[in-house]
Image (cartoon, helix red, strand yellow):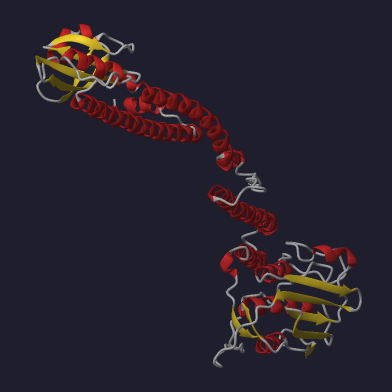
Length: 511
């Protein structure tokens, strides 16, 4: 039952945000219009009522002046009767619209002003009984057939005439208030038209304001597990909260797309590279002769070697996956000169080569010393593998032009022209030229990832037959001076695991 009531209620609630916004806007505008119209109407009515009361008092004051003078202002002669007093008072004063003058003698109607009135008060017995015999000035209200009447009755007497008279000033209040009612109706009519125009304008404006929300919904509906390329257009949008929302959603989609791409690359790379050793292992196990000890020993050695290779491939792939995460590098203030010397001490033990430490940058910079060491050791190991004993391999660093440069240079055979454009790609191998290896071709991809994680790049400079130089170019973030406790890099700096038997360059070429 509760669910049924909820479903019924939801059918009556507009689902479109645009409709709800316009509905609330119209409601608020209607309420504001109603309050404004009501307050204005009441103020106009009060003003009219005050004007009627003031007019009544003024008319009575004039009546009394005429009566107290005792002379007819038209002839200058003294009044001779109450009738003449009432007749003069009523005819001498000009009645305003919706105003009526009446005269009564001994409780009976005798005179009235000639202005037209909605009803004849002279024929209203109840009104005559109410005002015709008052003995003192009386103000009051009377409900007639034409609505409310506000009146003021003043007794009139004259020496020498025993009769008593009453002069009455009456206002048809409802008719007098018609102007206020008309103004209120006009305000409602004009306000209603204005509200409709405002609703139309608000509908257009709300549509433009909510367009980013619709774009978010449309983009979200277009996103699939294989296509995360959709983005919300924000060009030309005003800088407001909805534009910030669209920008944030785009940034989130960028992260999701990057993460999904990294995941797909990892799966594709793992499947691509692990398929070969698995096939080799399965093929040898299928033809294994359990009774032949030599065959068993050789097969076990081969399987162990292939498992080691798979382990190295998986480790490198995981490292490349981590390289796309924000915490892959952890910059800290580093003495670049000490770091370069420490790396040189490590790499010169990799092989019988002519090692040389060239220039070192004398600067403290913010970088990750372990990742930089890992990249340089990998490049040095790669140079050892593709050069002959006695070949010169140099290490150096330099700070210039706002950038730090670390390089490993050799005088080996160089990289073939056809391989240079793709040496930093994953699983890239050269066609020929250098001795073959069983590496996966991930070494230089890792080096490039470390450079990119620092905001820089890895640059290859090679001349066939004359040697190769690989340089890490990193935007320099010079560390502020401290109290002398700046960390320096020594031989105890942890060097990330880089297999010493794993070639880092493509087969058949350098690096």
